[in-house]
Image (cartoon, rainbow, N blue to C red):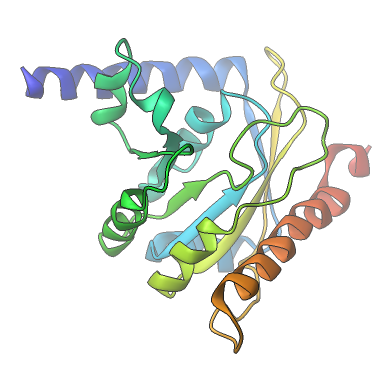
Length: 211
């Protein structure tokens, strides 16, 4: 039964991937294509972005599918009875936003050790105004433990049917997560740096900038 569920999940995912690419054809802008692609291929990296819609998690997982990216999803979504079997058989990792649970950290490290990049939305929820909330530094805790590079991605604009979805992929963020000081203070500082990089990339390469 589990084998059938796994097959059904992958088939549904593949079909949905084709449909969503027709509905929202992607346009990807790379800040440094070679450097970032090399980082993604190595697998030991954390990819993060702003979070504009509940479609983001699926869309970005498929967009970076060739790199075997695994995406964090909120535990309350992951555990929904009607779709749990899909999440369990696809490249998603549950994260509990309500309790002090660090199992997501060990699961993320395990996947990165297997050569799979990890994708996360540091805001922890969607924002529709273009103004991001403060980034929670947990994603940098993961990067620090794995000694991984951190890649910023901008979801530029809204999902509109049959309109190109603009995605901006930045080069790895330059920072020293092991610098002297209290780890919590250092991670919070660089979470702010990572958030600023999203704004910088959007201001430089965004659709409004290009128009």
